Length: 382
Image (cartoon, rainbow, N blue to C red; front, side):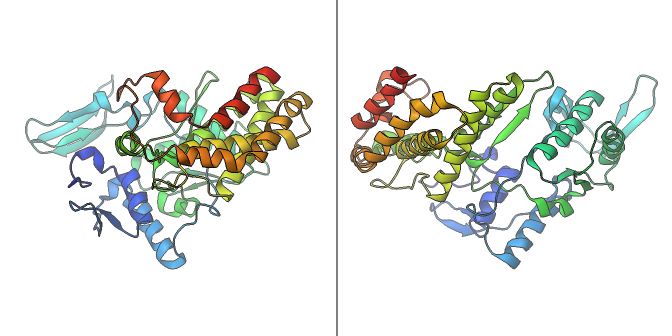
């Protein structure tokens, strides 16, 4: 269709586009709709070294394998508009050549930058309370996950030097015995790389809130329009819900821990097992009609989750509810799979794009009468 990665500025976002480009061996989409070798020029201020280190690793060791590479929790410094999250009202286009100065209430110059007309000046800041919370979250995550905690901070950057001082100060407030906590510059920290598996659709984002809540989300990787178009015309939805499955597990875990809800913890643990089975058996959507799509993915997630709940022994009530469900889903796997595949290949009317008709969407997304009948029994058993 002649749509390339350069059609609009948001089609190239360095932290999203580079992982996708690395995954396709250094290629992006050209105007013929084909993958083409690409040269990426990234300034040092955008942490170009992270991508260089990742590319060098792949050249030496080969492509990453999502089934074996594991995952890395990412604890971001975001609260109270920290770092780039609060830069919108501190972003200016320069009207003339000159100098931009950041001055405190006493007239001390904290920072200055020479600029030219039409330059974009953007400033970030981080308040003390979010930094304290960030350190606390990092220590907690290191203990909960039994993995090293690596602060990505570069002592050669003035802003990072200030953060390093605060991190070292606030780490003293916690018992870090037995924990592996390091402060590394981003290139060295890439040993513990956070690589999006193709798109942010498969990347779990956990945002703990300072007052105890949490946000658990996933991204669309910019792919939603193509997916909806294919679903409406071909009745095939290749959207991958793995990120949603992971986010649901993390939210149940948070609910269980924060409210001492044992059932939520069991649901989280068994969903984690289901997600593992989902990955091991490669039940993510394929790309073409006649193969598994999003609806099939949801069926297999339900199957594996029900099986895990039936096999666990921590909660007898949940086991009693889901044992018969798991049995029926297992016995009818081939039939349900055939019904879901058979619903593909036909145009779908969903009554709108941004605000589709819920009844039409439900009909299109739940085409297996066998699966629907089994799932309806859960509310009865519960």
